[in-house]
Amino acid sequence: MAKQRPSDAIYEVADFNSVQHSVGRSIHNLNQNPAYRELPMIRAELRAEGEPVSGMALAEGLEEYSERGAGYIDLIRTIISANDLGRLDKQA
Image 1 (cartoon, rainbow, N blue to C red):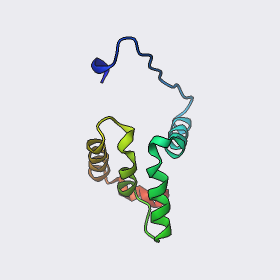
Image 2: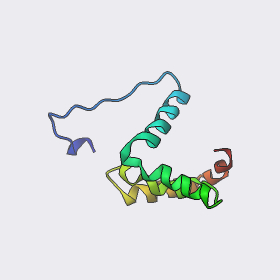
Image 3: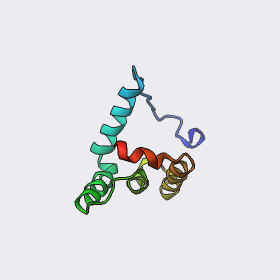
């Protein structure tokens, strides 16, 4: 939240030439940043067990993505459900 940020802190926002470039960078960040190390581990475990890799399952690995922690995971899962985004899991 902007009001909670220290006034002397520096924040940067990336600018991308396309949605695809933005999504690709986000995927790279989620797969490489140590803060999200649980995400690829969840995906690997699902694959090893022959289970489908779904957004609902992968959301668990996003706890460090937001300062909201578990509340962020709940929000992501609500968005997935409300918008029937599970139908896109097969395309991943």
